[in-house]
Amino acid sequence: MKKTLVAVSVIVILGAAWTGGAWYTGKQFQRRLPELVNDANTRLQSTFPQSGLRFAAENYRRGIFTSHVDIVLQSDGTTGDNKLLKPGEDVRVNEKVDHGPFPFAQLKKGVFIPSMASVHSVLAKTAKTQPLFDAAKAGVPLVGETRVGYSGNTVSKITLAAMDFKNDQTVIRASGGTFDVAADSDGDKLKVTGGIDSLVLGGLNQWQQREQLTLQDFSVDNDTHNGKQGYSIGDNTLKARTLVYNLDGKDILSIDSLSQVTHASEDGDKLSVQVNYALDALHIQGQNFGAGKLNISLSNLDGKAVEAFSDNYHQQVAQIMQQTGAVDPQQQQAQITQAFLQQLPTALKGSPYLTIAPLSWKNAKGESTFTLTLNLNDPATAQQAAQDSSLTSDQQWARFVNKLDAKLSVPLDMATETTAQFARLLGYNEKDADLLAKQQVQGLAAMGQMFKLTTVADNTLTSSFHYADNQINLNGQKMSIQNFLSLFGVFGVPERTAARGSAGGAAALNLLPHCPPAPGP
Image (tube, rainbow, N blue to C red):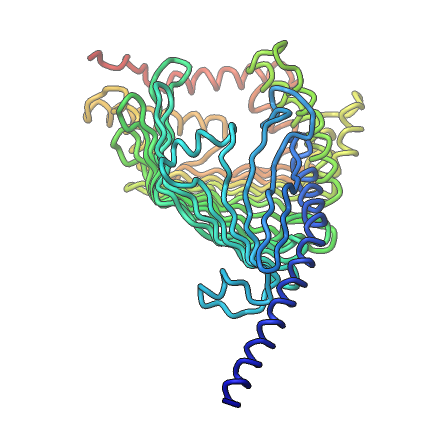
C-alpha cells in the first residue's frame, strides 16, 4: 500500500511538473510569436521588396498542452497587376502547437529531446488555394511537422501531396515529395534537403501548340548561412535525372543528369560566387548531341556595390512593371534589359574577375573547350573615360579592361559531327549531311585563319587571346588594340587597311560552300 501511494505521488508530482512546464512553454511560445512574425516580414520585405505581401498571426487560442494559431500570408494593401495577392485574398496555414518540454507529437515519434513546441501545419482551404485542393483530390496539398527548440532552432519536415490537374489548356501533375528544413533561431543558417519524383507542366503556347515539360527525380541540397554583409554564403545543389520538352506530342529535346552546383563565399568585404552546370547527354529529336559543362565564377566582388546594384535595379524594374496596359510585353522586357545594363557597372566596383573554366562540349568525335579570365577596372573611372571624346580606342579599352585571357580549342572532327547532326535534323540524308558539314567546317576554319583569329594544327582549330598593359597577343602575334581592330576594318581604321580586311573577308566567304536548300518532304 505504501509503495502504491509512493508511486501515485510520483506520478502526481511528475504530472504537475509536466503540466506546469507545458503551460510555461506555451506562454513562452505565445510571447515569441509576434517577434517571429515581425522577423519574417522584415526578411520578406528585404528579399522581395515589391511583392506586396506580409505575414500575420490570427486566431491564437492557448491551452495548457496545446494551442492553435493561423499563420496568414496576405496583401499589404498595395495594388497592381503584378501583385500575387489582392487586398482581401490570403494563403492560410492552420497550426496546432503541442507545448513542451516533451510535446506529445514528438513523444509519439520516439523523440525525447526537450523542446519548446511541436507544430503541426496544414494548408487551409481558401479561395486562393482551392485549385491546389482540387488537384490534390482527397489529400491536403501541404503538411508540415516542426520541432521548435528552446534556443529557437527549428527542424521541419514538409510533405507535398501528389497533384493532378487538367483542363483544356493546362496540365499539372506532380508525384509529391518531402523536404527536410533546419534553421537557427535567427534564420541565418538554413539547411534544406529533399525532392520530388516527377513533375509535369503543360499548356498552349502563343501559336496554340501544346507544350509539355517533364522533370524526373528532382532534388535540392542547400546548406547556407548569412555572411557578415548579409549575403547567403554556402552551397546549393539542384539536380534532375531527366528533363524532357515535348511539342504537340513529340519529344523535341531531352536532357540526362542535369545539375547546378553553387558555392558562395566571402573574404572580408569581398564576395565570390561559383556556379557549375553539367549535363550527361542532350538529345534533340532523338539524336544524341553529346555532353556539356560550364563552370563560371565571379570573384573580388564588392559587397556594398552589389547591394547598391541590386537595390537600384529592383527599383527600376518595379517602376517598369507598374506601367501595366501602356507597354507591350516585348517593350517591357527590353526596358528591363536596359535597366540591367544601365545598373551593371555599379556592381563592378573593386575590379572583379569573371572566369569561365571551362565551357566544354563533347561528343563521340572529341571535346571542344573555351576558357576565359576577365579582370575589369573600376567602372567609375571607365565611365569618365567614356565621356572623354579625346581618348583613343586603345585608351578607352584600357580604362575598362585590366586583363583578358581567352583560349578556344575545337577538334574539327567534333565540329563536323555536330554540324552534320543539325543538317540531318533539317532533312538531309546521312551522306549529304556529312559532306555539307565537312565543307562548312573547313570553310569556317579557313576564314578564321585568313583573319588570323584562329590556327589549325593536328586537325584541331585553336585560338588564344591575351590582353594586358595595352598590348594584345593573338595566337603568338603581339599587336596594339588599334591593329587588332584593323583586322575587321572598324573603329576609324585607315581606308586602305579596312579595304584589305573587307577583301580578305570576301575571299574567305568564297571558300564557304553554296549550301543547297534542304530537300523537301
